[in-house]
Length: 363
Image (tube, rainbow, N blue to C red):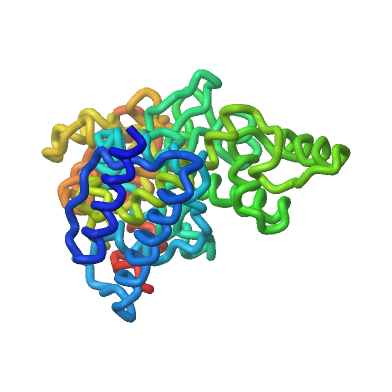
């Protein structure tokens, strides 16, 4: 098996050197094999040399957002480490997971990546929902963490994510992304700029990581992530994150299929007052109810609270019809429940947030 795997790696390297782009999806990297580690180093070196040749990537909207994301990565992905290599192999041997997750990420990734870069954070963090939820807004863990970023109730509340009968902000891609990035930034500062410790704390909690550090300090041992006695899930969590970043960065050369994703935003945002049934809005606007529900997964009852101001995420391709029908539905509901006056009705639909610029993400 080792001999066969090494032959596959050699084929991979030769293909890279000859600038071919097709590799076997069954390629794997074996632990503790020095020759294979060296071969993989050579492969990565060749890949980085080739990708570094252009001075910059195009900023046009047709530019792949996956490639743009890869060009902005700045972490040491440590692909040689056995735990990371094992996770890379798992992804290569399960390409459907990566493909499906990238497909679910299509509506959100532009917003998430743009938010990450605007905060001055490493682009890799936009990939964290891959391993948290497969970029699934409806994902729920056994620990009752929910949403793409998998917030538990207490942490969500701490970072301003409200949860009531009508709405769970943990499933709202806008609210949860902003909360997650703030949390990650806080954790990074708490652990003095060590992103691996910050990511470990995102998984098991700050106190969990601090306790592991203190235990190693008392024993005179190293306190880097790889040396800490962390929970089993956390020991695999960080390598899995580094692995998905590696796979996305080298998807072409690893024959991993990603859903097409151009450098342009998918959705627009509108605010309105009062109750709207998302089913009715979808039907009248000619959009799939599943698509509208998934974009607005925070609304538990698939309708908004009759009181208060709400935010709705709508595909840009359907923006005009959705805005028109949203205004009509809000107006009709206001008349039926007699909850708002004519002035509120006339101003019920507000322009999209200025922060969701239609401009491509620039380098």
